[in-house]
Image 1: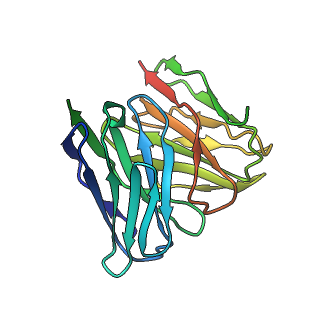
Image 2: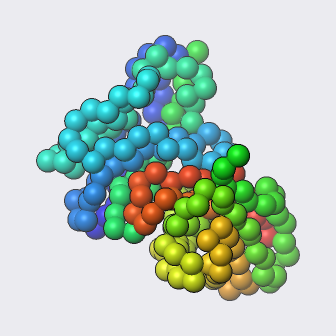
Image 3: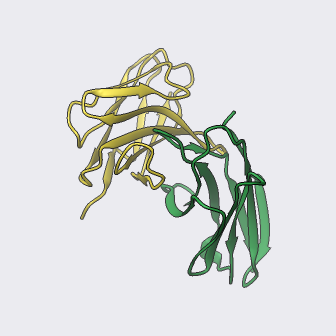
Length: 108
Length: 113
């Protein structure tokens, strides 16, 4: 299969750090992407990991471990504007497959 | 400004009517995609196209049809055969097939009454 699993909801406090996990099935796996979607808006691309390790882009980092079929998105110094849904997605030959998304709630 | 446009933002139709959602991009991208999103759900692929005059069914193509007569345009028709058409529809494009970075339009929220 080619499905992905991620938690449906995560809650964190403003200013803190939060990690959103994603596990995937290995069949035909190319790499792992992350997208952010605010309510009523369009998804926007955050990052892509093709190789094992950590990719950092400002307050956001993404990690991949191919041997564990696992990745995560790390958000640091959380701001209220980070309240959104976050989707992991796996790359393929001609399309990508999205997880069902993790709704991030941020408490003041 | 380069980007993807979808119109209209909100669309209402009576049950039994076909409706066509527009998607236009000026990014010179080869690949285009249509997704459906239901409340609290992820993105489910309806159709995708890698090149002009060619397209493939996604995971939930039944009740939908598309065309790709121009590189810039990829309209989606929701037919009366689609049993539960009320949803948020998102169009996306990418530079090439399989590209991991997709660019999304603002979406069309279709409500069938």
